[in-house]
Length: 399
Image (cartoon, rainbow, N blue to C red; front, side, top):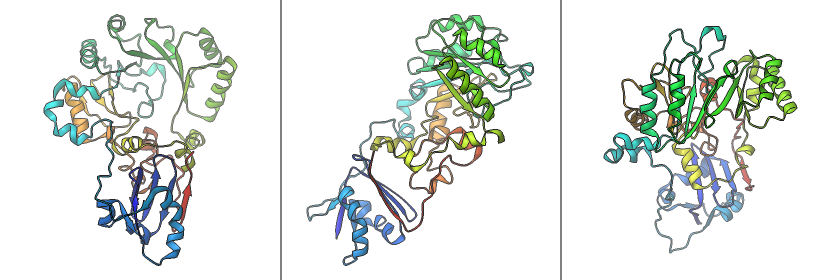
C-alpha cells in the first residue's frame, strides 16, 4: 500500500535512522530499522513524498499504523508529483546571497550584521584576571598594549548603524583607554542599544545615562565588595563568572538575599565546574518541549543562531564571528563589508550547524537541538544526553 507523507511532516533520515515530525501537532515518530528506512531512499519518496509498504507485512503495518494516521494519508490515483519543500521566509541561503553578489556587494551586505562587540584594549597583568575570552564575552589577556582606534570605531558604527541592533564595549581597563571620554561623547550620536561591560574593579566609572552598564564579577571580589556593589544599584545587569561550585553557591545566596533581578551566570569550563557544565546538558524531552515550525527547522539546518549576525573586533583590529572561532580579518586592513562577505561565502561560524558538528551530524535530532555553542566547540563534544537504541520504535505526542 502507498502512503503520501503530508507536506507539514518533516522527515530527517541519517543512515538507517529516521524521524518524522508533525509541524502542526508537534508529534514525532522515530525508528532505527534498516529495512523500513530504505522506504525513504527510493525515488517515489524523493520525487513524490510517497512510501510504499510491502503488501502482506502485518508486522510493519501495525507498527506504523499510528505514524501513518498522523504523518501521512493513503495515496490515491490522483496523486501527482509535488514540490514538498516549504517556502520559507527567513534569511536567504548563503548560496543565494553569493550568487547575487551585485545586489549585496559593498555596504549592502552589512544588513546581515545584528550585533557588534568592540574590545578597546586587553587585560593588564595587575588585574589578575584569567583569560576566558574564548568562552564568554570578556576581554583577552595580552602582553601588548593595543588600543583600538577611536576613528575606526566611529567609522564602523556609522557604516552599520542602519542595520545594527546592539553594540557592546569591553576593555581590560576602560580607565586606561586614552580616548574613553571622546568615545562616550560619540555614543550620544548613535541611536542603537549600547552596553558597556565593566569589570567590577572599575564599577565607579562614569558613563552616559543612555548606555547600559553590565558589571562583570569574578572570584577576585570579596563578599563585602559584592554586597556594596549590589546595594549601590549603579548597574543595569550583573554577569557572574562561575569557576567553581563555591562561586555558584555564594553568588546565588547573595542574589536571593538582595533580590537581584537582572543577572546572568557564565560558567567557565574547568575541572572544578564539571558538575555545573553537566547541568547545562539537554535531553530529548527538553528539546521537544518546544513545538517546531518548518521555519524553525530550516533555520537550524542553515545557520548557527548563537553566532549569526555577530562580529567581534579586538584591540589590535583583528575580528572574529564567534568567540571560539578563528580570526576572519583585520578591520585596519580589510573593509568590514568584505569580512562579512567572506564569512558568508565560506560558510564559517555563522553557519556552523549540528549537521556539520561531530557526532551530531549522525543524529536524527540535529535539526531540533539548540545551535552549537562555544562551550561545545571548546570541549569538542555536544551538551546532550541523546541515546538512540537500535531496532526501536518511538511515538510521542507534542506538548
